[in-house]
Amino acid sequence: YQITCRVEGAKAPHKVTLVTPTSGTLTWQSASSSNSLQCITVDNIENKLNCLRSINTNQYQGEGKYKCTGHNYLPNPGTSEKIYSSDLTLVITKDIVVDLTPSSREIECGQSVSLRCSAEGGRAPHFLSVNHEKGGEGGKGVSLVEYDKENNKISV
Image 1 (spheres, rainbow, N blue to C red):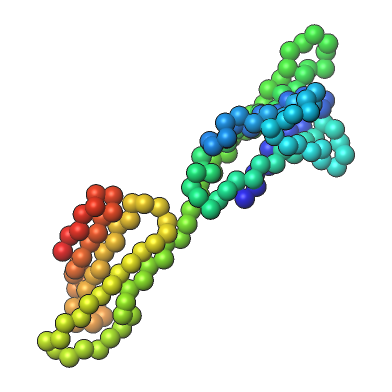
Image 2 (image 1 turned 90 degrees about the horizontal axis):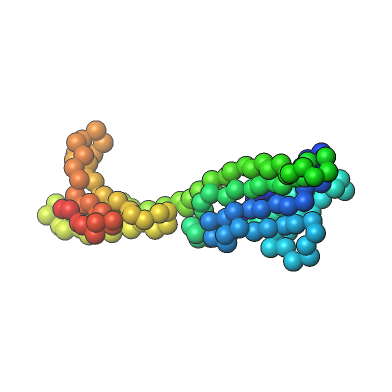
């Protein structure tokens, strides 16, 4: 995933910072050749910059608050700079895959049956339950087993 920090002003920005939750503060400065943030001009217009940062979304460590700040000198000589910022909160999600085996089975009255319910993905903690519906559809549901990963607790 890639985030774009776009900075533009009446004059070309002289400095851009991007604060990240994992890499700290990355900086681009027009007068520097050793920048930790890569920025490019937009449509060959020097007062418009796009600064790009790739985020690893295969793990949750890339999520958090990002802050892009543009620094622009004011037009009058000897005056200070103007600073503008924009924030982004990135939340990384992952679907949970749930599997119950066997998926359907007909057994004779009095026979025992084993069910296996598993869940993976998403965020911990997981709360997992296996419910039984008496008498087929429309019957009252009864919880057979509940597992609370956060508290490492199984309820039967």
